[in-house]
Image (tube, rainbow over all chains, first blue to last red; front, top):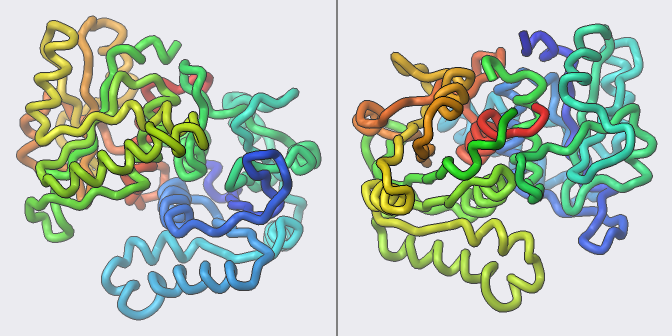
Length: 192
Length: 192
């Protein structure tokens, strides 16, 4: 049975450090629909919190504005389901801040689980990851990169890297919104 | 093994007939990111074609404009991966036109598979659907509704309705982009 992991899975969407098309480390811009789609998926699968990570003040203000539109006043009344989803969003400057918050909440270090569209050595498959969740009391932070993905340096520093999401086709250029949704379904989907 | 179904699965995103928030039948507007995200997922999982269905001339022109931006000229050179995905898009006025095209292509009637976020009587689970694909030579058109989803009338007319995508949480208000991605992964994902 999946789904029993729902109180130990957290999600982070990272805008720095990520790669651009040429592999250089950049800070990407926040995309409105990333927040909506991933918050709705996070709520569907019972994720503990959805962290949006950006060090840029104007981008943090943008996220706050989007979230407050749907969690206060007219937006909250017009679409309470959107309010429920966007209430999961927490804005942080950096991943170390996210890790600190979850670690304090649970009283034990959170394991950092990176995601990547490319094959990486020693990547963990989904069967193996679900087994780890079964056998382990800890909590896990699944980290998604925007733009052209998380940096190689970050992947190396993570506790584990999940295998890329693939079909049988060679092409694997999913949007981060699609990847987030599929990854949560693979971990916590009901009757898959 | 999943994935061997890839030459017999088609996808349609329907903008009419769909429901609005109050359950009335409407024509919804085309959303740019629906085209991009769902085309990229369709390409990842090896779908035969991704049909965008709208009877409105201005909306068909909008879809053509978006697709041609990425499949011709600068867009094609700048991001050939996006070209590969958006090349899967076919624009049609109505679902009967889609069904006719696929039926002519395969020389046998395509089975219409509706999707719905709510529970419906006699809905087909994913295990059962994959078994049907294994035991059957036919091809299948998976139909996704925009706005508040496909009409009850359409669901009743479909050959089958897939069970709603759910986590263990009660909430199930995924975006159509997320739902499409998850549904394709459940049917054709590798090493899920």
